[in-house]
Picture 1 (tube, rainbow, N blue to C red):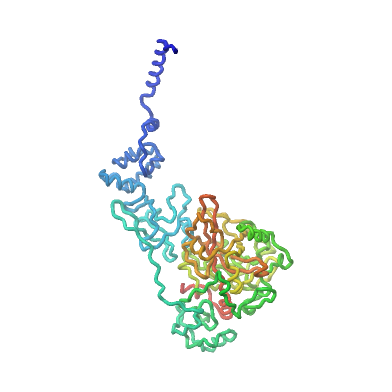
Picture 2 (picture 1 turned 90 degrees about the vertical axis):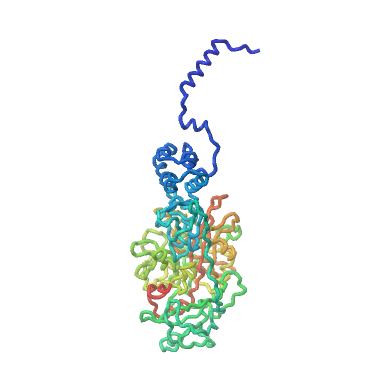
Amino acid sequence: MVEPASKPTAVLLLFLLHSCLANHVFLSSQRASQVLVRSRRANQLFEEMKPGNLERECVEEVCDHEEAREVFEQPDKTENFWAVYLDCKGTQMTRTQQNINIVRQCIEGQCIFGKGVNYDGNVNITQSGRPCQYWRHSFPHPIMREFNISEPNSNLDENFCRNPDNRPEGPWCFTQDPTVQKEACRVPTCGEDFVPSTVAPEPDQTEECLPNYGVDYVGDLAVTLGGHTCLQWSLPKLTALSVDKEFMPEVPLVGNKCRNPDKDPEGPWCYVEVSGNVTVDFCDLHLCEDQLVGDESTAEADGRERSVLGSNRKRFFDPRTFGIGEDDCGQRPLFEKIDKEDTKEEELLESYRDKRIVGGNDAEESSAPWQVMLYKRSPQELLCGASLISDQWILTAAHCIYYPPWNKNFSSSDILVRLGKHNRVKFERGLEKIVAIDKIIVHPKYNWKENLNRDIALLHMRRPVPFTDKIFPICLPSKKVARTLMSEGYKGRVTGWGNLKETWNPTVRNLPNVLQQIHLPIVDQNTCRRSTSVKVTDNMFCAGNISVPTCKLKSCSLVSAAGALVHPPSADVVHLYLQSTVLTFNQSVYCKSSNQPLQCVVFNSNRVFQVLNRRTAIVVTPVRETAVDHL
């Protein structure tokens, strides 16, 4: 049996207890709040971050600045809250149950009074029904030039409407329409019924399309996309220009009407005169889509197509206008011509077996001798990537030359081209050549206003460039070969000096020191279209890894440097390198499960045969005076 405690022991315990209580009759607010815990309410903005009870002091009741300071205990947080509190009429509204809910929703950013600087909701459609552009993306508008979403406490989330610059009209966003940069949004006003905006419906395409590239068109249209009046087909100077053209006799060239006598894939066209020079322009007629990707069996070989299958290579371009290079293109002097593989070709073959993406690393020197750097004269900087296709002509993306949302409208005097380069920054004396440009041809149907369809441009060098081990042209495939190579299962190589990883801080660029390369698989066209909000036409396709079912690509970003998808030699297709496309978009998303970026790029198929063969034979005026004016 335990003996009861002695009397002296009991007295001692009482004395110690009394001493403790005497020292801690008044607890600090921090300790008291730990003892007197109220049940957590839903949606208590700030309460998770600060001591005190914001809900009780300033939502359920009206608080003053001093009471708010006692809640936050930090001047900067107090001032930030107080500005929001005043905007939300927290000091003005009497506290009924309805008003308590209104003040709470306003503080939480779900509705607004006035300018709505604190708005934090998920409305992402403008008043007119335009979808908002993602704040992290640079297509179609270069958001990062104005706003840095990497800043602490930034609320520029997803593509939600916000008011980061305190605009009087309230929350707004950059739109996905290249022709409209910014537009106000309709967001909930506190205490009022809210009817959200909906995406404006696509305009109905009631006009019937023209089959067979419009060869059978016999209408009266005589004005081009550029607004130019067509010239009479019978004019002597035009007859002379058409002598070497393979015009179909069954297509009547009547008056000055738009026609397609050479079955141009872009449809009916005509000769026009601009600033005293004769050129060609296409007419605004709706063609039926011509599937370029996929079903190879539907491809009919055009008798005029250049053949790149096997050893019997048929010439397509006229050397007098195209220059030298078609007969020997695609076979690299330091590799195929000496029967040597580059170090990454075996990896590419292995990737076919393993079904994986390979690359994203330094390219071997001289492994892409057709790689060209478009260089801005002033200020001097890398502008874009491009590809050498002859000793006179260079192929690049049209958005590198002309893209109004980025204030791009370069003339030939604004750009230099640097060939034979491997190192991005260093001048490679004795290896690289710097050449001026004297002509720019933007694809006449380049569509910057919607989805960058036909995002292709040609640059003519002021003087022919001699070929070396470091400078050599890439081949352009025929339509038949392009159909095969752009089918799901094939892979291509992309090279360039672009960012090594995505970064949203406009002051930070992760540019490589040397040329980079990656191998990407062609993606099924339906999967490609489902993966992006950008309209993918039959002239475009995707390459990359978008097969993970738990991830979804939400939008695209315009790449700052156009790349090219080239196809390495393959025993069942070709025995030389071919360029089928130019890179238009780059998009990525991180999977929550693996935290690894999935990459997908959207390419524009090359459609340069007719443009080169026809337009290089006549005088072409600068881009600012012809192809760009009508866009």
